[in-house]
Structures are given as C-alpha cells and as structure tokens.
Length: 309
Ligand code: ADP
Ligand code: MG
Image (cartoon, rainbow, N blue to C red; front, side, top):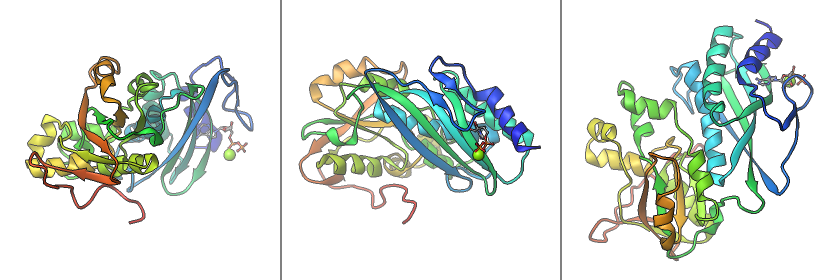
C-alpha cells in the first residue's frame, strides 16, 4: 500500500473533529487555535518494539498504548488533552496492521476528545512516536518541583501488574494492564490546585518518586505498601509482588504529594473507581526510603527501569 493511502486510513479513524483545529492532516503543518488564559502543555513519548512493548503485542494494543503513555504525561501535568501528532515507522506498509493500530489509537483518543492533527509515516524498524498537546489554566500545571516537607505521598490505583505481566504473559488481568494502560487524565485535572507535585509512574514508583523528590529538593519516607491487585498477589509470592509494586514500570498511575489537610477533599474528587492510597511522607533528607512497621529500612536495591543502565 502507498504512503498516502496509509495516512488516509489513519486520518479517517483518528482525525476527531474539534473547533480549535483549523487545518489538520493534509497540509504541510497543522493550524491550531490556542486558548486565552491557558498554558499549552506538550509531551512526547516513543515506543520501540521489543523495548516498550513485547514484539507479540497486537497492533490495536500498540495504538492504544502509544497514545496512553502520552496522555499519562498530560495527566501528570493536570492538562486537558486536545491534539496529537503521530510519527510512525513501519517495517512493512501493511494496511490491516495500520487499520488495527489506528483502531486502538482512536478507541482511546475519542473519549478524551483528542484529534490527530498530523504526523509522518516512514519505513524502518517498528517505532511509534506520539506528541500530545493539552491545556491548563495559566499557571495551574502540576509540576514535579512543588513537594514540601510534611506533605503526604499518594498514588492512584494499583501498582505492579504491568511488570508482573512480563513474567506471566498468560494471566489476562495482568496482560491487560501492560497492553492497555488507562491514563489518569481526570484524576490529574482534579488534582490541579490541590496536589503540591505530581509525576506519572512509567519507570517504577521508587524511580519516579525519586525524580519528583529531586526536582523538589526533598526526600520521601514510605511506610505503607502500595495497593496491589488480586491478580498480582495470586500470580506472585508476596515478596515478589511487593518488588513489582515498588519498582515495576509501565503502570501509568499518578504519584503525587499533598498537604495532609487536603486528603479528605482529594479522595472525594478524581475518577470514580480510581482509589487513592497514601504511602508515606515527604521529608527533608534527600532520597526515597521504604521502611517496615518497625522502622527498618527495606528499600529494594533496584528502583526501576533505566534505559541507559
Ligand atoms: P510532508 O511531505 O509535508 O512531510 P507527508 O506526506 O509526510 O507531508 O504527510 C502528509 C500529511 O499527512 C501531513 O499533513 C502530515 O502531517 C500527515 N501525516 C503523515 N503521516 C501521518 C501519520 N502517521 N499520522 C497522522 N498524520 C500523518
Ligand atoms: Mg512527512
């Protein structure tokens, strides 16, 4: 199939109508209307086959995940998604593959009102780069740098499933979390003006919280285990499950900090059915430490995924 026909296939599926898209796919660039009184938040993530998803992942799930990991970055900024671009490198111009990929992308784009407004299509090893754009009221973006000593460390949802799926390919409930992560967009928006700092958990909770702490010039002392799913606890021993929950990548939950007096209010706010758990506190001493009920240090040696390790 020709490049033009592949692009047309993607356009039909993913070019959601929005008033602020003056020119979308089809010209040399997209022409987009920005919003008065708002900041534009932009994020990019690349997925490489065999690195960011197993080579056996279906094209539908790859399309879903390529957008999901990007929307997760907008969620961590408290931004409302608007537009996306897609740079697609394909080993073969297979229309069935591209149609399924676009189907997965559109299945997540539609409920979030995201319009695909441009991209590029090339031949080469399977690699997908998505850029997303979203809005926050001026000055209201959630940053990594706002955590203060005494804040609670919180997390949405359950952790560790995606990492466990890499060892238990056949457990559908775990595989679902790896292949179709659900970005916490509504939770992120609800946390604006309430959370003091936020980050999404893509490389592992301890690793990502470590980045938040470093950006804020603080540390964290964690004394409660992260919430874990029934599927995780059934597939792994308690000790292995806990290591996945602390350090496993690909969860795409939000980790955030909060003045303690805001917890009750925040628990009532975000996505229905997305629980919020507290894990510990922000402290002045740099670094992230996990302690047991007796105060002994039980921090796992490995903290998360590191591409250039
Ligand atoms: P150019 O030569 O200007 O780079 P292309 O032929 O690469 O144009 O793309 C034609 C149009 O299709 C452009 O509007 C571009 O943004 C869009 N496009 C190309 N590939 C994709 C893709 N994978 N997803 C969405 N839009 C795409
Ligand atoms: Mg091009």
